[in-house]
Length: 264
Length: 290
Image (tube, rainbow over all chains, first blue to last red; front, side, top):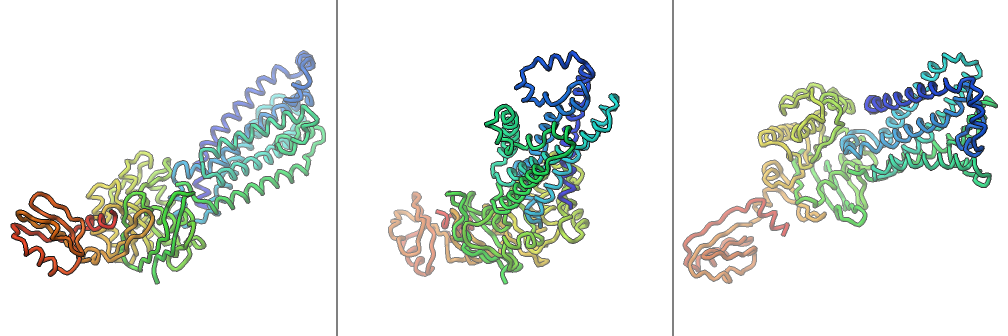
């Protein structure tokens, strides 16, 4: 419990910074949207764009001139923000002990490595949930002026649930990297590279049918905002897949961290 | 039962040698010195005892329990002071110490304040505002505040000024008098000589010798210096003579053997001066080291 509390305190500043970025991003987005809002000219411009480009940015499934459609497009950027932060928190919370050489102190205390990892996972999870709540809260505030219908709020809730699953997948990937890699410098950069690679997969898997199989390798494709909007449900298969990846990474993290030499 | 029992403990970092087949027994209540040059494997041994790293072979027990299987339980009763201390920079000293104390199932607050006072440590400062020596003091208070039964001290005095070193040694002696066992690693012979009852010498990862400090010093080694005109140093080439050096009119050497035998050889010369001294631990140590 004491490790958990210390970690939450130590990571609070990072949560505030990411929270600030999200708040800024939502406000900039909504300000932009004020130009699209109910504007038929905007639709004409979008129609004239190449379909592949629209597909790549998931803009063809949504009517950008409604707040619901606009949020459908924003989802990609939200997803990038919450996954990058989650992966970085996950890898950093483990590897910083070796980077700052504090691990010699921490693990000469009467704690097992398993307990240390558990407390750190929970503390990082607190940050992930915190960031998601900030995103959700600020969205509710920002869209209020457009008086969205109940379908929007339902959609927003689904978006947040989908983001949560993406967060825990990348949090777990980050934890695994932090636990497994003795080379602490690489944990964070590999975690973020993985996000960029899987995001790239999600973009190209939509462009070509032959690359469709890539969708299983990229959590960015697990939850399609268009499906969330039109079917008002989350594909349970992908929920299980997400939970499965998360569990595997976490278990892998525990095992590798318990067995390896600490970098001192 | 030995407090520390190390059997054939071996550690390789990849292909690089850490320690090889280290065997040690440290008995309850003793101050045990662990001495060797930098890179000999002192810290490796201590980190293996704390299971911060894992052995390539062999095993170690503390309080009769395996250091890997029951590591966290053992560490409840260990005070560890590393050579270089690193703490969470952003924390205040007092918060860090309270955090550390929260892992032990007893109230350490009184002892913490007492130690901080002795070591003249400002509890209100942030860790990253402290000098190297003051960080070391935090390490001492943190390592001692829960009054464990075993102390693992790895080059504990580096960074402390002589006055603080003295206070630290007094604290350690008090703890020893209370019944605590001390495992003291150092490359400074004088402090080991001052503190320890037994000593193990480690060199290039292997234990060269384990001995009572008294025996090591008594070990019949004498440092002899003979001064005479027209001295033929070849006369001194008998069993037990080592490190024979000729300097102008004098001959210096170590002698380990029957003192009468050497006296006969010496008295056969017309000597002008003679000194026979106890070698310092440093000189004995160099003897094993070379």
